[in-house]
Image (tube, rainbow, N blue to C red; front, side, top):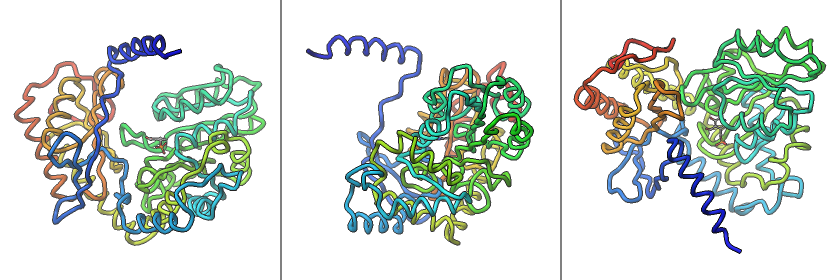
Length: 430
Ligand SMILES: Cc1ncc(COP(=O)(O)O)c(C=O)c1O
């Protein structure tokens, strides 16, 4: 037997994806990391190109992935225990580093208990498997991350047991809560902390206020869950994330070690009982090898840095250069979405211009992500810039200078009939 027939069908499916504009571009391969020097941050080399690139598309907001303390911690743990756990957690694949990281991340986010996963993606799926029942109803923000959407799909609830509210719209959240069928025993309201394509945040305080009156209506109440993968480490006065920024904590916090902490892996933090349910019921925790001890040790070192003066300095620098970048866009009268998060979207609102600017930046040594239709609705075409603590003022000035050249010289015309959102400001392209 061969896979000839399957290959043919898959080729048709892949061609359809490409025709719809949904196919992913070929993956660029990073071949070299060039450390920061003088007033320039780190640079990267890519296979097939001799140029050096600045990354403005990394989630490593605090730039900790190359920090000597993390590298040393990973090295030490590897020398102690080796590179792999040899088995899943419940078959003696649990090492002291796993237990230590669970304790440390729970303390860091201010929750009683935590379980770590290979990723935040599998953490969301594990949470859904652990807390869902046939009488559970899930409600989510319309812009939630794919891992939450997938988690809602695999939670084995009937499709009717789902509500989606308009992005950050509290009236619409209330509508979803009002529409929960009377036989439901448990309601889960789940949302991103920081919306990764936009850099805006969930108003957790307002969400909890809307949910509270409904808690008594259901046998097991209304459980609020934030996935703060882009917030923890990078947001709030001490990097505790969107909960710190909004002053309230939901019932469950999901997060990642793979963004601001610069490592890999995910976690769920919640009550002791929820975490024991996760340990017993989350297939994506139970039946898969855990993170390596190297990952855990590096993540522990990253949390220690976040919790130190050095971490506060990194956050401070990140905040400063993010503001410089945002102000630079504003001074060119370009449209963005306001806020302090280092995800800074540039609303281009035109597919061709988005591609042109992404290519222009690439040709000049800057890596960014462009989002065009059908990934975003027509008129919402955006370039996502992600500022990292490793970026210097000179790096930011360089990128702003390129954008200025592009806006002034390459695309002088003003588009017609541009859709304006409530976040828009008068822009060169608006
Ligand atoms: C909200 C959210 N959750 C989960 C993830 C996935 O994180 P991980 O790489 O740890 O699976 C992302 C990553 O983009 C995210 O934005």
